[in-house]
Length: 454
Ligand code: ADP
Image (tube, rainbow, N blue to C red; front, side, top):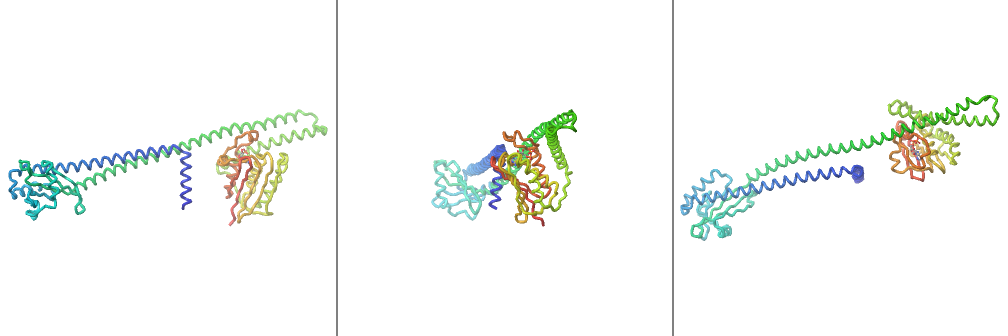
């Protein structure tokens, strides 16, 4: 599990390294979404404050109106109660409307609730004394009572001579207001959610564009490889042809060949050998190109059967003894007498020839070793060399079509860059796997593993 998360994280980091523009996208996305969230939050809190302020104004206006209406009748509790009932008729959020007398007991002289009349409201004494500072203003504050948010608004009733007759107290429940605010907030968040969804869709599309950009870069790379191949292939085709034609002309122009002397015969053999080599080069190039087109079109026939890989690998190693020794290399084979794998014998031969051929070709000094091993029922073929080696960056592209390592060392070595691609494709079609282990400047190991036969 932990390993899984780690590998996902590593994969993510690698992706970001390869596509740094993703960081910009994520950053912009986060800023836009954050900006929207912040603005919505601001709107909501401003709206909330405005609504509460409006409610306070409404209540204090109500109190102003009450005092205005009742100012001459303040000693007439019955009249006060009537006015209270009239004013609250259309204000069903008002749960308390009291008129309190400025006597020692803070007696309630009129109220929305008849049963309160005549009782004392001394518990709110502190509140009433507060209003002495500004007897013409309403004092309001909010508090929670029985789980509901309420507003309490208190206003002194001035007696016209600098004192107060008493107080008017109102309580209004805020649950209706809160429900309205919550509904509005929900609507705002719904819209915000839609906007965020749109932004995410936009960024997903953007990410797809990044994919296209990567694909485009890859296509350009492949296109370049193809161009390289076309110029290389025409060169490769032309040079052996020129040699063949030149030597053929030479042989044709030599007279009396049937009676040639020993010296001339040796010379002629050398010439014919060169023609043969060039013709073989052409043949293998054309064969590679044909294999590529067959593999691409799925027309390459593979017939799997049980074959003794040891026998094939040993014979091929021996056939490379001469070219290896000509380069001053030693070549060896090691393996059990028989190791049976399920493969197409011709294609297996082609794969091994390619790997051993490459090992000899890309090894300036040292040795090449071919080994067949049986490990836990699997059969592995290992072709090792002490050659140029392949860096890990190069290894990633090694099995791509037309890929050749371009360096000072490989400049003089001819090739198409098709061999390893064909090898990998053939190995895959024979249900085996191919891997490479290599250190630049030290050497390479190419390993093919044929799975255990069930
Ligand atoms: P080529 O026709 O160029 O040999 P391959 O597909 O067989 O094409 O190999 C691709 C490239 O891989 C070669 O050009 C060479 O640079 C590198 N390569 C292959 N085998 C070896 C090896 N044993 N040691 C070092 N480099 C190798």
